[in-house]
Structure formats: C-alpha cells, structure tokens
Amino acid sequence: MKLTNKFNLPKPFEDFIRNDKYSRGDADISVTELIDSPRIRQMKRIHADNMEQDISDRIWSLFGTAVHHILESAEPDRGVVNEQRLSAEVDGWVLSGAVDYQRVYPENGKMFVDVVDYKVTSVWSLLLGEKPEWEKQLNTYAFLIEKNKNATVRSIKICAILRDWSRRKAEQDPSYPQAPVEMVDVKLWSFQRREDFVKENIQLHQNAEQGWDELEVLPKCTSEHRWMKPPTFAVKKPRNKRAVRVLDSMEEAQKYIDNQTDNSLYVEERKGANTRCEGNFCGVSEFCSQYREIVHG
Image (cartoon, rainbow, N blue to C red):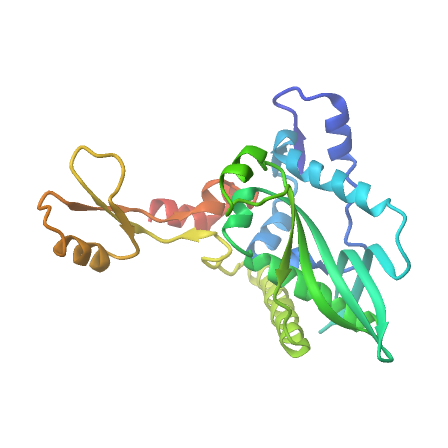
C-alpha cells in the first residue's frame, strides 16, 4: 500500500506509520481478518500495489497503538499476561490473534481466565451498544486461549477508552458515560458455538481465496459487512426541517399520520446507506464491482 502525507504532518507520524510492526506472524489469517468480509480480505490482497492511504487516516489507529504500547509495558501482577499472541490450526489454516490482557487464576483445582481487550473508541460508539464485531473478536480470542491453555475462559470484556469524552456532558446527563474509560461486558459463547463460528468463517475465507485464484470470482459483502443502514420514513410538517417522527417502514409512518388530526403531515423516505462502502472504510471501494453496482444500480 502507498502511504501519502497530504497534510504535511510531522515526519515522526509518517515514520511510525510506515514502520508499523503489526504482523500476524506465520499464520494464514488473523482474528481481525477472520471476523471481517472474505471479499475485502481478497481485494486487499489483489490490489495491494494499487491501494493508497493518507497517514492522516491512520491517526486514531496510531493513538490506539500508543495506548496498547503503554499498557503492555506496565509491570504485570502475578497471573497477568499482557499482549500475548496465540495461534491454532483450524481446517488446514493457522489462525492467529494477540490478546491484550489475560488474568489467569486457580479456583477449586481448575484454571480460569478473564480476558480484556483495549479499544480506543468514541462515546457515540459506546452509547449505541455492544458492536457485533467486538463479540466475535473476543469470543475468537477465547477460542484461541482454550485451544492453547488448560484453562477455561470465564469472562470477556472491552476496556473502552473514550477519545471524545466530555466532563461537562457527563455532569449534565446521567446516561452519558461518567468517566473517559468504561468497562463493557461482552457475551461469552459456549465453546461449541465459538468453534463452529471459527470453522464456518475459515471455510468462507478459504472458499473466497480459492474462488479468486481459480475463477477470479469473489463473494459479495453482506449488509453487515457494508455497515448497511436501512431506509427510514420521516413524518414531517411542511416548511419544517425536523421530522415529527422517524419510523422504520412506510406502513408505520402512514399509520401514525392516520391517527393524527393534522392533515398537513406527509412522509419523506430517507434512503438507506452502505456506510462502509461510501466512506471507503474498507479501503478498497474504488476497486469494488459490488460497490459500483450499488451506486449505479
């Protein structure tokens, strides 16, 4: 990938990003890749030499890396394991992932592990609720831990570091996060569900790789991978910018109007959006035939 510096950021920014030491090691696929779209993974492989990114787009990633470096350099307590890379062979591929924090402890003759993953994120992201990718990522880490250790994962959590937290908003709104760091419990799946998830996604990525190498055919990204926002239907008054109500279907919107006495109300359809594609958050939308089909119909 070609890195640019369109905003003339200081050279240390550029050097750090260019020399990023992240690696999945000798693995065939990382946990981050596993839980993402097989199409995107293949397109990054196919178009690696033509991809371009400005270092300004990597600033929050750089911030997250810095936070990880600081926390993993702390002297760990007994039983604590910081930033450990684990791997396991699954259906002919090696899967690898780096677990930020593990607390390993005995109880009644058995060993247990509590897992924490650090995330630098926005307040809005936290208020929206647990992200599906967080649940998938941490349960895959739990799978790797139990494959590598004679221990049972008891809990998985996100340590959310809120980059845009406001003390003033916290004082004014009790529903707003009350500190710039918040611990988020993540649902722990059964081992069988974890194993099924990993195997199913390994198969999807293997099929995508084989499909391209043999036939130059790629699977489609799902609506979840595209961060698809469905259309909504706004009930509005003439000359008012703000909607009276925003509903999920035309039927619901029309039913709402039918129950009102104001005859001037009307419905405005707000189109859905493929947020990831349109913002090029995948990094490959400019090369993507599926995206062109979505845009041009």
